[in-house]
Amino acid sequence: MTSSTSLSASRGERRITRRRRLVELGLFAAIVLALMLASQMMNPFVVMKIMCFAMFALALNLLMGFTGIVSFGHAMFFGGGAYMGGYAIKAFGWPLEAGILLAAAVAALLGLGTGVLAVRRHGIYTAMVTLAFAQMLLFLAIQAPFTGGEDGLQSIPRGYFLGLLDTRSEFQLFLTTLILFVAVFLIVFRTVHSPFGQTLKAIRENEARAISLGYHTNRYKLAAFVLSAALSGAAGAMKAVVFELASLTDVSWHTSGEVVLMNLVGGIGTMLGPIAGAAIIIGIQEFLSGIEDWILVINGVIFVVVVIAFRRGVVGEAIGSLARREGR
Image (cartoon, rainbow, N blue to C red):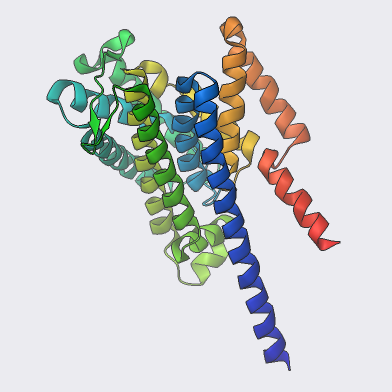
């Protein structure tokens, strides 16, 4: 009787999990449609910026939300990808997809080097390691001759993506950004819902228990770190192509803090939270672009409000509310 009840409960849990995954995919499809409509109703470059930062936020969420590793230096991967991808496209005439792949590869190597040290620390010490590496990369970006210094790497050309989409066309540039955005989401979605992703969640919840079960937790954390870095690099390269510029802002600690804020606002540890957070933060920034000097203050106010009123983020609170209703 006990075995039968346990089996029935297990099947019920699997059905609920499958339903939640389908709901996530359905909502994501709705978001894609909304982005396509928004690109026709407002400045498409704002929509593309949202997608680029949503990719970046999704990548960080894989590390911070699903693995439990806090990074205050993730802009090193985003900005490093922007510079490397942009330089390869501009200086060597590489096609867009090759530049994005190079950016992801270089960011992955940076992630490997940083992660080897970072995953051996815990809490604030991990965050400080990532911040230290990011500051070193910022100094390199200022001094290196190919980065353009304070002027940044300008006039990054747009060409064909996969030989099909001419990104010199605004609409086809939007489609290219959308394709990469969907690809990054699906990679993170598949990773999170795979056995590897379940192990990452177990490490996040109780690393000591995961170790006692025989898992080499540092290896799993390092793999997550490298994948997160690679996706961040790809997002940075796409952003550099969209705006034809890679700048010091891309590798600054401000950008690292901004993407952390996007995750907090949207909901850490949720699939759709980073997208919602990116849309909210960038939407507010664009709306208040006339008072740009106050953006950091506004970001600080948003952070305080989220910590006090929406501790699980917008999406996290919505999920919690629905769960409470289902439990009644």
